[in-house]
Amino acid sequence: MTATSFSPHISRQFDQELEDIRARVLAMGGLTEAQIADALEALCDGNSELAEQVIENDIKVNTLEVSIDEDCTQILARRQPAATDLRLVVAVGKTITDLERIGDEAEKIGHMALHLAENQCPKSYYVGLESMGNHVRAMLHDALDAFARMDSESALKVASEDPKVDQEYVAILRQLITYMMEDPRSIARAMDVIWSVRALERIGDHASNICENVIYLVEGKNVRHVSLEEMRKKVRPESD
Image (cartoon, rainbow, N blue to C red; front, side, top):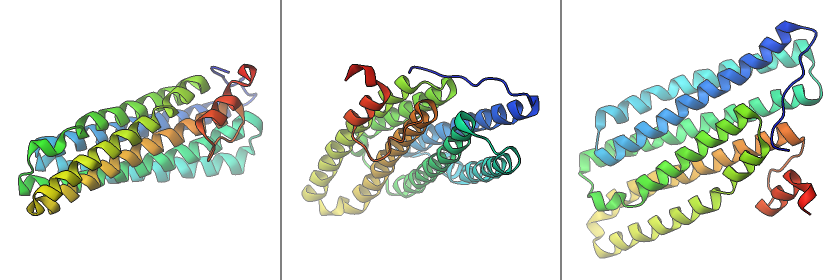
């Protein structure tokens, strides 16, 4: 199934409540996407002011998570949704948790950017990191787009990018370990970069989780903790 949509309810207010939480998830996603972009710029350009802004803005992400979660609880209590409506509320709850954790990872990169700006880290240490950062940011953007369109095929495509991010992570890690072996004085700075790369890898994981939430929402199938091949079979059963 490539996409789905909701049938209108007798209660227009219920329709509005469901549409509102969807819209707010996308707004929260846009904020976390901006956090990733700013964190990367702060790190690679040594911009301490921008790094501090990323750290401060994390509270906005947290506030949105709490607010949307409260709305979901109210909908469950008052509307007692079933079928697709229930899956939407559950998927929203899981998605905002992943978005909040993405915000936390961006904040970590902000802290690392502050340390590295003070220590004047060589540009060579960021080889591959910026590309990986743009990759996971694109994953998040596309995962949110799949959520907005309720498109399980697109979600599957985005989730298939996660192994590539893992490969990038390993390659950058090897390069940084080489720097540390060649010059022990670089260990502290290289470790800050390693923590930043690790944060990017985790962002990729959370973007993939959001895709799993989309597949659950559209297909009604739980694809957590399964291989990509098993995920494909659940989304495309006719191809078996």
